[in-house]
Amino acid sequence: MNDQCLFCGIVAGEVPHTKVSEDDTMYAFMDINPASDGHLLVIPKRHSVDLLDISSDDLTAVTLAAQRIARTVVEELGADGVNLLNCCGADAWQTVFHFHLHVVPRYVDKTKDRLVLPWQPGVPGRAGTIAGLGGRLLAALD
Image (tube, rainbow, N blue to C red; front, side):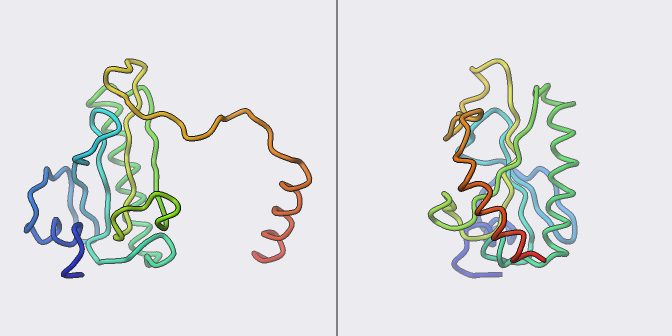
């Protein structure tokens, strides 16, 4: 636990919140600034700063819980789809530095869904740049 971390305070029961699910490793609760009806967060109980810091065991537990919760969101809330979102680092919009996955229910009914894409899918990138960056990553990951 990190004494200065908002999400550690939630896990400890020191910060008001609406719990959705919990086990030995993970904790899920409703987002107080929701992008859609039913938007929630799934976190590891053990503090980790971000995707680069979280242990593989905690990441697995959080991801599997997010999948289970996503299924429930579709069945229980009637969501038409679900986005899982992680922001890693301030420049990637991370505002709470405790790893978390957003489970964002998506609805055709836009009165329930306020999330919009920050980029335009379907707009092609530069082929040379894509190939060059892909080659660098392939070499680095081998």
